[in-house]
Each structure stands twice: as structure tokens, then as C-alpha cells.
Length: 180
Image (cartoon, rainbow, N blue to C red; front, top):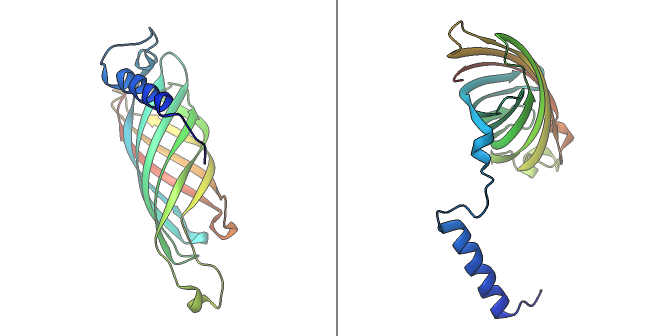
């Protein structure tokens, strides 16, 4: 364990507290000056060959004046391959032009928490699903309504599990969203 003198620790905590709770800007840079809302959406995702079905809720943010978007997501899905339910949180970065019909590519990652799995004794000693990190790459097309208030999205995603190769899969998704 690293020994930190109490005075250094107290000064560090005091400075961080002042920075976080002062309500004043310490510097002129404010990240919100470079962000604009990208909209919220709900996604139905499935992979019949890998027996994966789920729903996801996303919230996107554009970098002002660029085709770059970040999207936070929270999802719930079932994997029939390992007979488990998962909840996940993560982020996707996309390169997506602001056209009415806009193709996109992106990638990201997230943490998947296992709610339920089959016990080792029931699978003959085969390890069961557990919580894990994953990464993904995706591509698709977003179609905006004429008023730009709503959109539909069709996409494909390849997901790679960092721990368990049985949980690698390809999926397709249909999304509906509002914003921008």
C-alpha cells in the first residue's frame, strides 16, 4: 500500500472539493460549448442464429459542426447461447453525416452484467456466463423525417466479448428516435 502524508492528502481533497463544488469555472474551457443534443432513441436488437434478443435506450451528443456523435446506452438482453440475461451500459462513437438519409459507421464498448446463468453442475463443468467487458463495431443508415424531429435507423453490429468467445455475435437492429 502506498503511504501518503496526511497533509498532502488533505490539500488534495480540499483543492478537488473546491474545484467540484465552487460553481465557478477554473478555466475558460467548457466542454458544453462544443456539444449539442443528438437525440434519444430506443432500439430492438436481435441475432436469431446466436439466440440474442434485447432492447436498448440511447442518448446521443454531437460535437458542434462535425459529423462526430457519441451515444451512451443502457440495454437489457437475453443470450440463449448461455441461457442468461444481461444488463449493459456503454458508449458508441459514430461518424455520421447530418443528411436526411445518412450512412454511419462506429464503434465502442460497454460492461455487461449477468443477471442469471446456469450453474456449472448443470452444464457438465462448462463455465457459465458471467459479467464481462465487450467491444463492438457497427454500421447502418439513419433516415430522418422531413421535419428532422424523428428518425428510423437500421444497423448491424459485431460484438466481441473480452472473456468468453461464446458471447461473440453479430446482430441487426431497428431504432426509433427523436431529436436534433
